[in-house]
Image 1: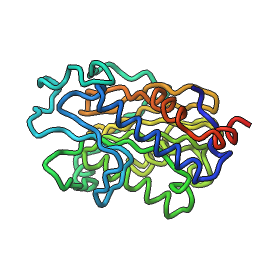
Image 2: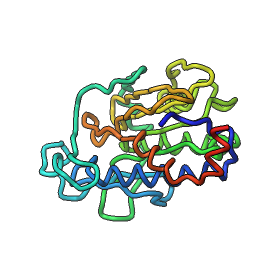
Image 3: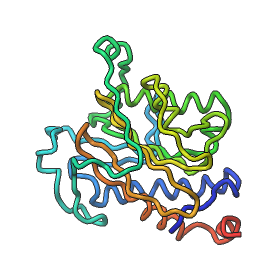
Length: 251
């Protein structure tokens, strides 16, 4: 299923699809993509963050990828597979601060349950770019998560605007390490996976309307990740998207 041009519909129409896409991503992660000692929750409202999908780790994991939960079947998604191979994306960035910067930039975000937040997935909405304040808030929260050791995957199905002329990955990287991110095409959409550990790393894949979505890495440790089936979830959400709204995008 090729990516549609979501600038052609109203924010409310996109929000309906956005909600379905998030549901299917979470469903597929829990259906076998994630190891057994991890699970995803959708729209978990945990101040000061409100991500679309969060990945939690059960308390009995040893956290190094060698526990019993790193491989196994969990239903719909088949067999969970963790990997350390380098993600195949167009742009990769790495940055390691000096020791003093590590202490200064460190923030603390706690979850209100016994489960540790490992990573989050954010799918950008028009509201995130609707004003300078909203955009700063979105970027600031993403960077706060990364500084707290939480890995972040951001999918932006909208082209850059005046607030992010080089795209969301550049805005995050600039805030996080005060360096520029990769230069992308003026109308490109982006998928970007950030490692919330020292050294900071980012894996960025630009895409365009009409492209299929690559699987993107969702890091569970600084070395290990699972591939998120963004395309499969997109197709599942599109299947149940109302016909009148589909016509707006297909016109």
